[in-house]
Image (cartoon, rainbow, N blue to C red):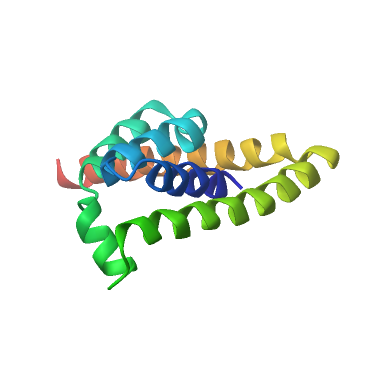
Length: 130
């Protein structure tokens, strides 16, 4: 559902402001929806990734070929509304079944496992190649 939160903010920002850049909207979406759940180093990497987003014009050409900019905003706004409907159902389900903390716990476990694994690999590589 955090991905849906991200998509909602991203598409909503693009739909509401036809002048906003894709990277600006992506940064806002990440900061709002995903950033609070990521460790510091991952947030820094994500910031770099957001700056590599395509221009809004290129994004619109690839996703909506031949569609007028005003229509694109209308489409993005409708998409946002539909995503928000799904988000509200999922978040309600997660909250009622006390699964919101489970999601955070799973992410934390995966992160710690990856971090520990990468530390072990680095130590083994240093010992092997030293």
